Image 1 (cartoon, one colour):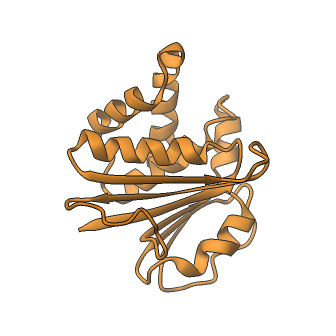
Image 2 (image 1 turned 180 degrees about the horizontal axis):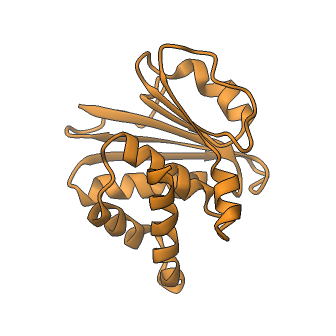
Length: 176
């Protein structure tokens, strides 16, 4: 059984970081994983997306056309990917930045004011981790051990002091 994810937003929102965190979480749990980043040449402010597949069996292709789960951090991303999500799938979006509601009624929808929560908690750059906490919480994949192991893989040694801050942001999202 495979789970396919699409993360999308603009550069600087930590889209690729969030996808990489999920991929490493899968690796630390001995799953088969694919992580395929995509970003515009503008970097910060340009488009950014990544596809992640986590499976019990080998992944044949890293391309995700119809994700089970969409994480949209801005309106253009929701507009672009909303209709690609499989019926019965999940859409998580940053309701601080996206004012419209999801138009579909055949998916589970989770509006999270991630940017607002991040600002209110003094971590304005961690809206991505707040949404990741919610994603892992709603999918039943949030364990402190699994999240910490993945964070240790994606946070560089020189930023090791950010581990607890990221973990707390994820817990904030999980509990939202």
